[in-house]
Image (cartoon, rainbow, N blue to C red; front, side, top):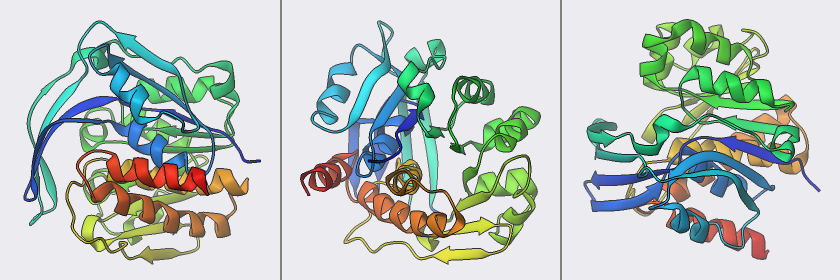
Length: 289
């Protein structure tokens, strides 16, 4: 037995360029990356929107995995299409364009089962939508991501989301925007806002840190043969992290410490291919065992 996990996030089509190559037609999005990682540990309910141009591809990706797509809205509007170039020297993503597509129509509608799930993950989204999902959920463990744009443009709403979460997942740029300090030590001032108990600070090739009221614990990245595509790695961290908590049915500090180690393993899988191929393989291997 394990707790169940509800994931609210994006389902996207991506055009990705990295120093390792180009793939103009990658299926991804925060909900998919997180769900694939989390499904190695517990059943997952996905809530998001996709165009009918990509819906069957997502269904194929999750075939035979414990991922419920009943909350996936399918629109006649094309799937959100993101064009990005990843710079491995400075470890930043440079957006080359975006077609918003179906994303503009989405609002969270959690099924009865998803609303009752003990764990909820909120992928980066307009904070009003994240708060809407929180209000529909009875989860005891809530994790959320955000973006620098939302922090800069909707600070009060982002702060409200933070106060309603147990674990906040942020990169160094988001951390700097939130508290004026992009270090793990700077994240300590966020802990204790509302119900927030921990911050997972992600530093790309420098690893990550788990920041709680009492400690800052640092984690090295898991080694990979080659970094191919970092898209979705942060959402995979969240999936592995929350997945282990769900599997153990615990959210005490000792479990959170172990959970980030699992999250880093899932991030390494996400980094190792364009799209979700290695995460899919990892999820199926876990299910078989």
